[in-house]
Image (cartoon, rainbow, N blue to C red):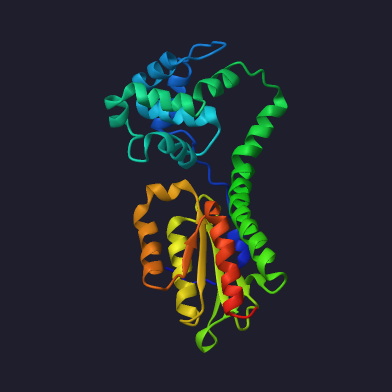
Length: 278
């Protein structure tokens, strides 16, 4: 093979668009089942049952599409009613009535009626493309930022302006690591706080555990490290949540809070303020 020296333009000039079909076998089955759904002004539990009886896996996707939410969010909503281990096809077969009732509880019949009887115009197509593309990313970002804002409001209520947000703190041996809040500052932090919610862009469950461990390795052993997390999706990955609980039980994490624990979180921050004379 002849040795040549390639140039940037040799490659950029030869780039093409990689085309790929969006449909697979499952998508084809979903579309086929969608076309069988009768047009009605309202839908009943019997209609939902018939849909899932026809093809459970395709109906599961169709329900998600009617509700306009991601697969994870649909599983979470259904799991919150039935239990996270009871949302599969075996559960539907064993407890059909309860399963259909749960779908009713998360308002699937109403979502079906709204979608089927909707009269779209051309702009709706573009809006839907925006929602399903950019909208998903924005939704994830807002979830994550919402938890950070919740945490910052309580930190500010207790410490005023004596903190730095979304910074890199200096730890043992001048180690530098990212954290959401360093109190009173990032150079000599006395308290470290990380806010991580599952379901937020860039915040997978394993990321939460990994980021927590990075902070633990970098900080002084005597620096309190508080973790704020939330999201019922944790119920589907209990093993990772157990890892965080283990870190807390071992003393590597001082305390783990959720948004429902706001009062306790604020009370503990005020106690730390007294102890560290802040």
